[in-house]
Length: 527
Image (tube, rainbow, N blue to C red; front, side):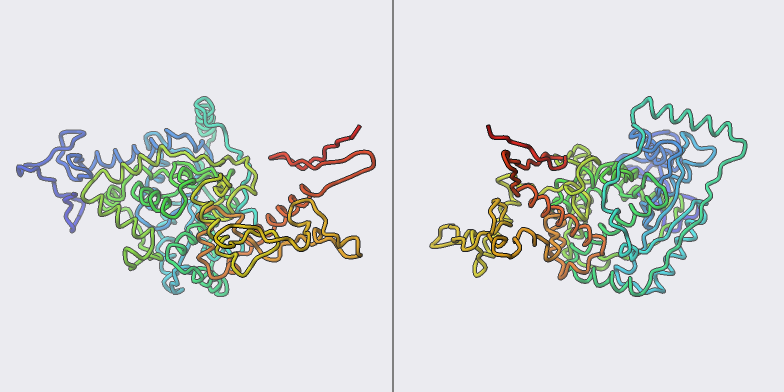
């Protein structure tokens, strides 16, 4: 426990040993210890800062994802972790910094006040406080309300091809040398100059966003929905402003809670992307988490000791009970367990480092095989025996009573049987013609148009639970609904082309689908 006096004025109370003497710093072994993060791990003020700074730069240098000269967008929420990340970037870009950072930073803040039903006066006060922090850095900043998600294009949830450099050692060192030579050859000092954007939310958009959040029945679904929409706005802002990387302020404690809560909400297949250092699901914009080696306790001590400003912004779960949502309950469980067993968070965090997904997550995958909300690979494939397939089968069987169609399985005397078909339907995918074309009518296959938007087939299991919890899917942003309709029509067209027979005189053509390619007609000439 840190023994820092509450009335701190540029001095720290020295940590006493068990025998009553003064503890020495475990690193320099000369100065008196001021901060104790773990049992027996005491540091003086200078060594604590040096260790904190080294950990941040070592994380970036070890992964080598950010190349010199790249534009990096810092996602600052106003909390302790993201504000500490901003301070580390400031110190790393200073002229006298050891192992100086060499990227071009920018700041973005997503105002979620409309989603949590805050008044316009409270939102303006928060924005003014953050603007003062951002202006002091000298970096370009963008303040974007979450209401902008209602005006995003459909390209936001599509994976764009990546144009980043290869991350092997030779390419990275070459890029560093070229950047240093460019800096030496330039006579004038380069300054980051770019206009700042402060968007204001409109009342109709705020009401539409509040209607969307209010349509979710549980707090768990509301939190997942807000997190998803926030990520869409972040990616769109980075793309529109020319940033190739986005830095997130997720700490080790936050990622440990996120790992357990994601497993509880059915996102186990996407843990590698949600908790790893880099998230490449969007292709051209990579999300990185340089604060993932810091615990929340360590960040709080650093901000207090070195006067790092932060702004408290209430969220959806503020002042709620521990059992209000899965995320809230998981956070309470991890924090209480961490208080008695200090290695809890680090153990969970180290486990997340070893996770890999079996789903295809490369940026070259077909966009139709990705979730419409989280843009991760779909995990709803029919694998025969799985918990998901058992759930889907139970849902189908529960809808059979009083709603049977020809050829549909029904329960008769405890046995599963098929009802007798009365009229042939060429839309069933069996290649049969309904016969209406011969009597002057139109074949029902020509009417294969989706009557309503079917989001279920375009979502992963976890996002299906979010949409299932909504009272109406029509409240979702238009770019999500339009993309879902486009995928649905594309799927119906593919089915119609695949199962439609094509015949010519003297030969027969069979349409064959090749995964990952267009549809081809193969001639089979009968001899």
